[in-house]
Picture 1: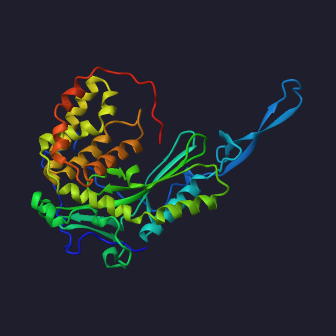
Picture 2: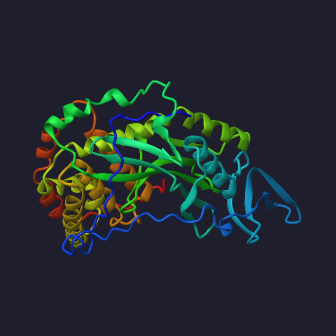
Picture 3: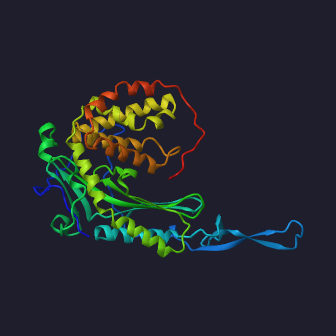
Length: 391
């Protein structure tokens, strides 16, 4: 696959270590750099699944056992336990198969074998999630634009015969710079990742999504629905080979969406916003989430926002890219008890797509946030009994 980059005048990266002062490293602004783990999955997350029929005793004749053909039982053979009952047409995809599919997709997109960044198996062993990433595959952003590096190859020097569909939808960088300036000497690294979510129970679909982790603080952001990079597939399929084919077909048409999202992140650097107004943005993004929390908890989270704005403003500057990092970092403090991590991360990317759209009026948007902080902090407590679906 070939990739194109935004700006040919990209210069070599200058990446001095950013050491924040004690004042900036406040209680809630503790940056944990991205850590790369081994390239293999923990074997304990994988197990063979046996499909067995659902049988029931005839009420009129207790000695007779009948077959319920519309359902089947899934058994975790490692534990020798039944874990769920699904419809007979449910395609059983083992967690290991889901993991290998994610690995293959990553290699197809980026040309390098991924490493496991995060991996989770639910207590009942039906729900599995893995984030695949590679320390040899990263985007670098600086004042001149962005560039993708993978392995020992510089993707900028690869074939550029494919027309860059998404690159030209924004104004030229010099036009943007006349209004705002990307911080001089600024350099940042983002690592693309693939998240695979697999389920061995009814009521869910397989999800495969693209996203980015920021290297300095391990902030994770899924690209979201507007980027059209969410592969969602029902388990009502004829075979695993059909699932693989659909997944590869889906992502083979979407390589440019990574560049699109990275271009939007670069554009955020060129959109100025004062720290006083920046603090209003996470209130706006997560308004519905915050209103579900107690007044006491909202006030605690208000202090979290203050610390994050202070830290990211000193590191990145007073711009919308810093605001995005404040929001993604703030999402970690919201908890996933009533709303999934996936959904919170998508909310940040949805915001990014909104404010980087052509003809978006940044000043009008910022002015519309006037009073939102006090309005949320002083709103009456509510109780919503409807739980959010995990994905």
